[in-house]
Image (cartoon, rainbow, N blue to C red; front, side):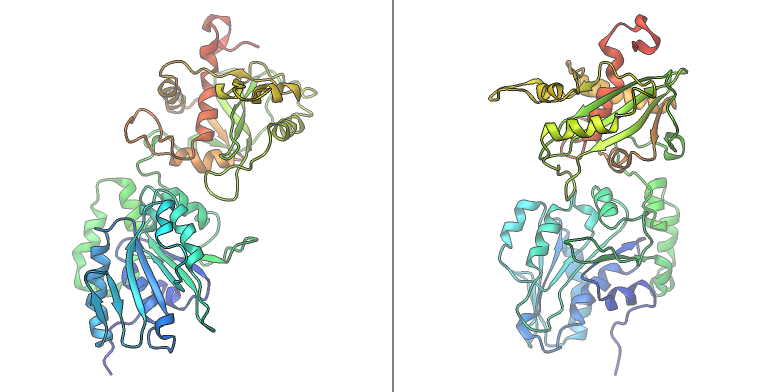
Length: 444
């Protein structure tokens, strides 16, 4: 019997045989990920599940479906002579009842087009094309079946490149744990990633040797690292691209000398994360972000919904020994909106003050966002802004922030920019008072 398609040793075989509920096949270009995603669904056709075996393969937009549809035609007509593709509905149907839909969805609102559906197989092609994973995560609720013995699985592919780079990297803990290690979290089904490389795809290397050369000759170093090496330690298209260098700007924690000036800043959030950072200014003019308190919820860009009194108590607990160590916090900057008490007896700022944590309105004049952004860039470029490695949410979010599509002089405010805003408030502290008062405009 002639073999039409067979998985190559390595990532393709691992992906098709992996029993874990949620699996990501990531890596370089040319690893055969799309074909393998299609075969993940197809391998269960004709196994007796009939019309209970339903799957949907998603791309971000409708035009992007064309390539995966073309590849499905290339293989499915040969492997399954009785299968038919419905052009108007974009669905494969098998004589035994199975169906595979090709669909698109951009954001969480698009989930409602599929609410109540049952798809024991879900596929997502080029997962890093999505800005965030809200649609992807919402669709997991449709991965179900009442048929006994039915496998249920979520499968996705991507390269380390795209607007969703940071979200995918975080969800699958890329760089924190090795590929193949299963992620088990309380209240969540297990997930794992499998790394793919072009060098496994011997068919492509033999039939199109120039393809590898085309990747090697890419002029953009980030794109080359992503597509040729499958390197996730890149910040493609980020606001700080070209200035952010972890090897220079990230430092291991050390004891802040009591002679240094110290202060803190805060960007308040309830449904969204709050971000509190402690700054120190060395005697030679280097800024250090050395502490972090970040209200991170159960998924990206969601807050912990903690009351201001709770956050104030956390800050006081963190600082409980600071006075004894010689640290004195003055003129601590916070999001100006916390001082509004419209519709309330007390403002959020007053609640903090009543708990013994005082804030001052952050610099928020015209163009303050752009000016603050330029100040961060200047300090990084001059190697005068250092981040302690323990500030994990700062390091998770800020290097990945994209520029605003309408204002490239600012970051995208729809992204998780809370650590950024707190940093902006902190470094612009010098603009609050005359520069002649003290070094870099900071007063003890």
